[in-house]
Length: 129
Image (cartoon, rainbow, N blue to C red; front, side, top):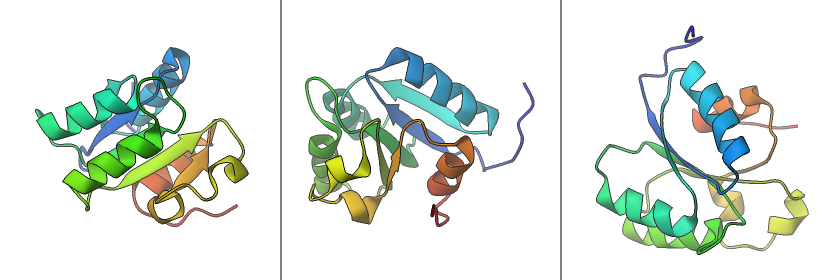
């Protein structure tokens, strides 16, 4: 598999309970040159980030998951490290996340999102429709 760009080998923590979506996103992100760690819910995300067995540069996280939602995990992780970039994603309409704490400030894109938009968002570049 050829890497299409060099992103400096940033590490992404990918958090989603849907195995098929994790497989697709992980393949796209690895193909674009990222290291990808995966967990299945917000609780595991908080534990993985706090353990930091590997450097995590950014978190890409679903909103609706069992055990702990993405929003709850975002708040806990931001309490621990206010500087880590977190991008929330959801299969639901953007209106379903309006009013949730930190969502607009941190980033949100609907899933499935075009891989280009995901890559731009992860790299901190503006994404607009």
